Image (cartoon, rainbow, N blue to C red; front, side):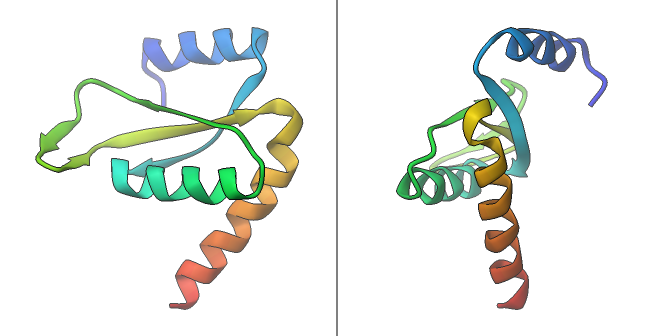
Length: 89
């Protein structure tokens, strides 16, 4: 992503305790991942650009998933397990 908002977010997160873990398409998948990470004791913050298409009750668009830097390694491992399981279904 090369847009100015993303670069600004990168600069801000460098100074904060969160880092970008991944990006998914749709609020529903983002919320599922958020619950998955929270059930594994990892705090999650979601960020979605306002230019997404909203169709009640589902939101389509790019959603960024941020985790605390201290949990990033564990979160990447959990994400890999999640992706593997989804791919095998």
